[in-house]
Image (spheres, protein in one colour):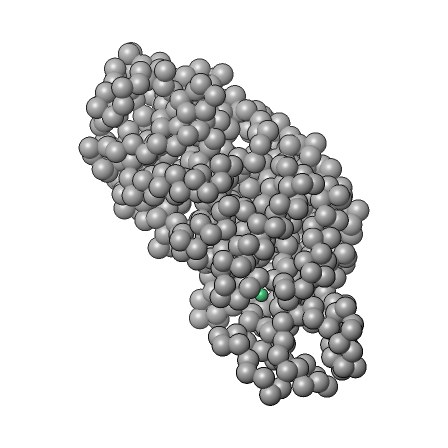
Length: 537
Ligand SMILES: [Ca+2]
Ligand SMILES: [Ca+2]
């Protein structure tokens, strides 16, 4: 993966020396920070840039067309080459692997065996090798753990079915899944399917192929805890929990209570275990889960979310004041809480379809959520501007298309994909060789983030600006304070920083976007569609 080392070295040097689009133009009065200020600081905690990999669509190591764990290993130099400062890789600090356990579907959200890697994806040794390599490079690996439901081929479900066919109420699996018996009134609002050969109907709110585990059963709780322990022992760093609010259907209080118990058990094993929940709901609901674990911030994601709106329309202050309110709330619930921002994931239309990089909107959205608090998640291919949406075909497979490597990778689209529009303007291979590509932009953006640890870790204070075409925040961490300002509009803005804060501005640490930043005394000029990181005394 280091075929074009010279080119990248050149790009890296440009980064610290300052091409107009990246580093600030110095005025006589204000020094642009020197190269040292862009030296990345390695993460020692969970404030990390994660990268979501839909394993079957990412990279195929053995030519069978399905992405696999060896494929991820092969692409580690693309994701993180282990050197934060060389500017030669994206710089991801964590990987979220979509489900990898044995399952009949391409997406594997219906697990048939929690103790077997799906053969299409590789072996347990492959998972060990991947986590070992990641740890050498200070990258955390989290698994997508689907425990609200299993697949119908799971031995637990087979044992449940057999126990009911036998009428054996003493069987330990008799109560493993949620069900009602013919003649009883089914609980309202839920979906059930008849269990063949019995008078039992099992709960299956997502699909008949996804029977719901019964969390009133201590045996179920122990079984799903054992699964997580097994993979922590094997070396993974944590989990993304699928469908977390459905543990108890339509009962967020009880579901949240379950997670409080479950996460407590995991933290007893590893206090640093990385956990994040999919609670696709309003903030008032995710708050119920925050005492236990962080939740993805679905409120600001997607086409109509605050990140995209601010990237397009210039109302950055709406986003920054939202973030501040969010953090104030969740920190009151859990002092270790983080915000987990993202634009899209495997259940959403790809951002490249509605945020063209040609007009700078994609770059601005990336600035807003990557130069911010917490632990952001990039969806694979986002850094290439990949497109893919459900469209008329109404299939999620179109949101999970093969990664566009452009170098002969044999990975193919998932089953059922039908997206027939242009997918990407330039492949990964092309973008890696182009310092003006979106990929190179993401790479530099992550370097700037890492060089200023206060951005993601610091105490976040939204800055109310008189000129609301721009917006930003201040963050202090271990004696260092930075100010991050974004101008996502089509016009330059001029801000007198003396009106914003009493802090002394020590200089421009970095700027990134379509233009440059210039500081004249306390007066900052921020070009159209540009963000700046300022050092403060
Ligand atoms: Ca394969
Ligand atoms: Ca459930």
